[in-house]
Image 1 (tube, rainbow, N blue to C red):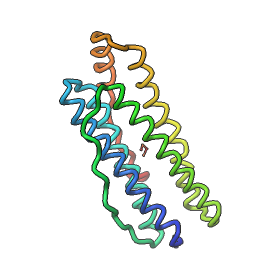
Image 2: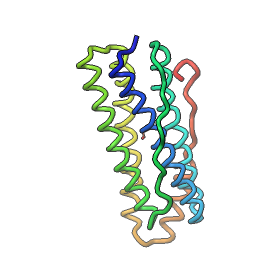
Image 3: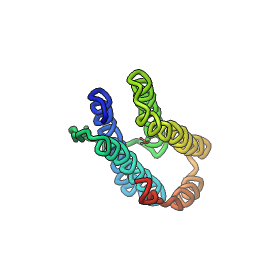
Image 4: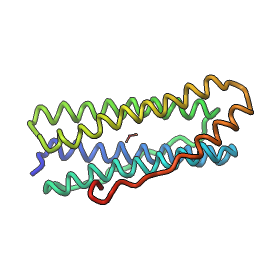
Length: 171
Ligand code: OFO
């Protein structure tokens, strides 16, 4: 059975993951408003991944006899001054999420909660990817600068991203 402290911390993490989804969905709307449908597609796939992350914590709490509690979500920002600013915010947000995963890893060690520790190892690796993928786009946008042609090319490239739902056994 999951301990109270871990249950509360994971419920908070469900909120953080859903707030990630909410933030990225707001970016989907922003990119569409700018005619950047490829970037919108990239962020749409990112949004769907965040929901999978939230559900991993949801199912972990449920499977260990805990009680999921859904907390209120903050309203995300609506507009950004440029695609670069939006992706910079996504990168900063991923660094914040990494710090929250690190807090959970510390709590699991303190509580000697081994099942939580195993789940969290997946998130430790995932956060390396999350930071890397957002920072790569930031770097590309920085290099492109004011080139409209570069932006169109990058938009096309990012539009190729698709969401791959996890196999049922991993959900
Ligand atoms: Fe859930 O990894 Fe991004 O936020």
